[in-house]
Image (cartoon, rainbow, N blue to C red):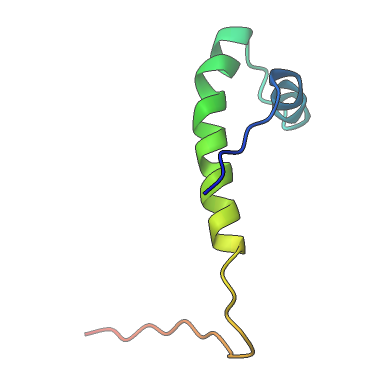
Length: 61
C-alpha cells in the first residue's frame, strides 16, 4: 500500500474547517494518525464487491 500524506497546511485547513481550534503542536500530534486512517480508508475503497447486494443482519442469541 502506497503511503499517503498531506501537507501541514492542508491538514490545518481541514481542522479549521471542522472547527477543532487546534494549536500547532496538537496538529503535529494528530496528523500522523490522520494519515494512517487515510491509508485504511483508501484500502477499504479499493475493494471491489461486484454486483452483490450487501446486507447486515443481527441475530440475537
